[in-house]
Image (cartoon, rainbow, N blue to C red):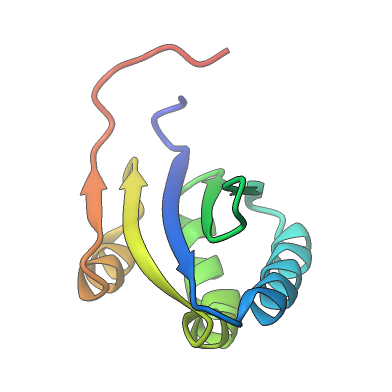
Length: 119
């Protein structure tokens, strides 16, 4: 991982009877993220029973994460939050002070880059 790259990991549990709406909002979030030049990855993974989802997000740098949080996230996170619970929110890398505060407000954790290999 490049020292400037920022990744997010978010785990969701879909509320009973809300899978269709959850999936619809997830699709809208993905489409909006695709239009963001600083978003390198925005990938959803589902458990076999369709109840649990994991979202992996990758951004080029802190400015890209902040742009995402101030745009797409402000619009669509409340919609997806109505369909599920957020079980885990973790940030890997330095997302900048504004995003650190926002993540902390959701009970999320930020892990600063230490060392590694990313090809």
